Length: 337
Image 1 (cartoon, rainbow, N blue to C red):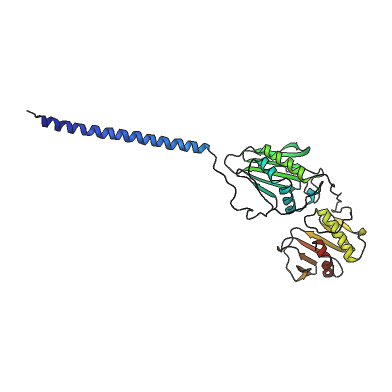
Image 2: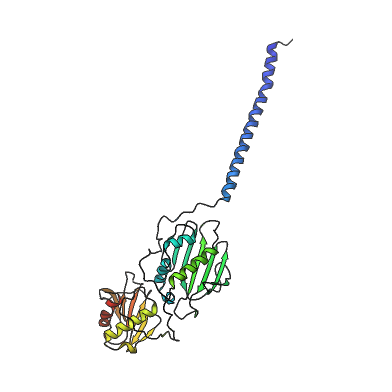
């Protein structure tokens, strides 16, 4: 006959699996609950845009800090060198206006274009030779901005907007089209078309206050001669540089500048001697100095290096006579010395 101790032993044997199953069930519930939390967090994170920040280093490696620059008037913004145009566009409206339009703190730098960034947007503005036939965002749609002919293209990545500031585009030697591009720096781009239009209108107003029209350009790039007060060529529109070169040629040669032949491309010829300014040039291989600057003198003429970059800005002199002596006279006033 079984005793009470026998029954308790049997109960202990049958109870043991029930506790194990209960523990397993509890562990399963906790595991499923944890998986649910992970899935929920993952889904929520997919809906959030990644946190974007302004660059830690500015200007960027390829950019240049903003510097004081003379602002153009009238149509002359279409006749600036690339770097000067970039500086002008970056400073055509105040920093506060940039931030109002783009919706946040804005960093700007110059280069081949005016480049600006916010935490969410990447923006470029530059002068171009003509309206685009197509863009990276597809075929543009014709529209108007500030009463001027424009084309616009928008997709999920951003907006490209080009406006013809001078009606004679493509103008021989000029860059009469303002091109503005805005794209998002985050996965989901903010609405960019409205910002592109607002920024473009503001830049046009800032860079084109009332002033002179571009000079009429002939088939070979020639423009009418205009007498201009002596001064430095830095940041001047190309035709103005040409007129300054003509004035200095006349003074250096001792001849009336009335017979000088300026071109739109920052050049002038007088009595068989030509003086030309170039923003970018074939690298200078210095053989001497002119007005204290590195210069290359050979059978083709004299090339004076104006900056520390041998392939940067130069003044070139070609023709008859003592070109080195001519350059020594002309270079200092053209550099504002």
